Length: 268
Ligand SMILES: Nc1ncnc2c1ncn2[C@@H]1O[C@H](COP(=O)(O)OP(=O)(O)OP(=O)(O)O)[C@@H](O)[C@H]1O
Ligand SMILES: [Mg+2]
Image (cartoon, rainbow, N blue to C red; front, side):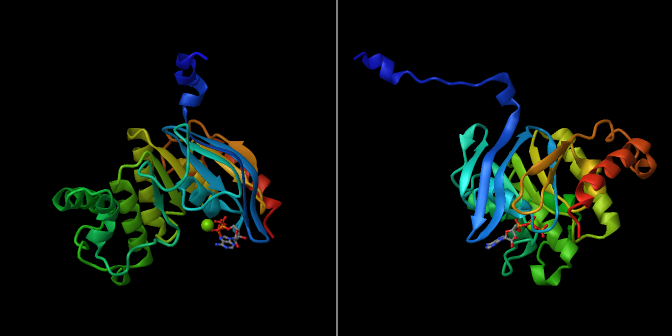
């Protein structure tokens, strides 16, 4: 037998694949008797923000955890940059719905924690953390502990922690749900500038149709449990519009109505 032939490695990369940062194929997830996801497939283009919109309990957090490598699917595959996910990795960062802060650690330590796990030296990680603490408006609270913060402030700590590790893929589970309306609008604008300026892939869960339409490149509408993708909607041309008037924009309202129509049938 020709030894050379057995050593030949083939790399198959097509142009189409190169634009997809995260690919979920036929993923199912059962928790005992509870069937959360069934045969769900979805692709997340690099540099874009994809929102997951669907009824409560349909499996959005489950899907994010599977992509993060925190949970194994019952069947199906997840590829990040063409490689199968086998566990958590530095290429993905998670902003949790329930904050998941270390209760015994200060804001600074919490924000710098992802970098600490990666072995970044203390002075360097604190300098990076300080930048993101300032970015989310928490300067002055570096020494505070999570129990001394409001829900919205805790959410901002979680956001700063995810941003500080500079992962390629950001998994955001309702990151703005605990903040007031004004802060939420500021966060939405900040998120849009991140999407515009960094070539990261954002996977964003929200319950707000309006928020999804405003911030997304694509919106995946999920069916109730066992969930699959029922529809993909790509709002275009809305980002250039003025945020103060967008809520009266006919194009914006049409997309909101379209999504509402497809979700309405599932809402009791
Ligand atoms: N660890 C678990 N053990 C058993 N069942 C679970 C577990 N986690 C989630 N589930 C079930 O899986 C389904 C999907 O849950 P998941 O948290 O993914 O939904 P979700 O879409 O994020 O909901 P929400 O919008 O309310 O956050 C639910 O029926 C839930 O009860
Ligand atoms: Mg959830």
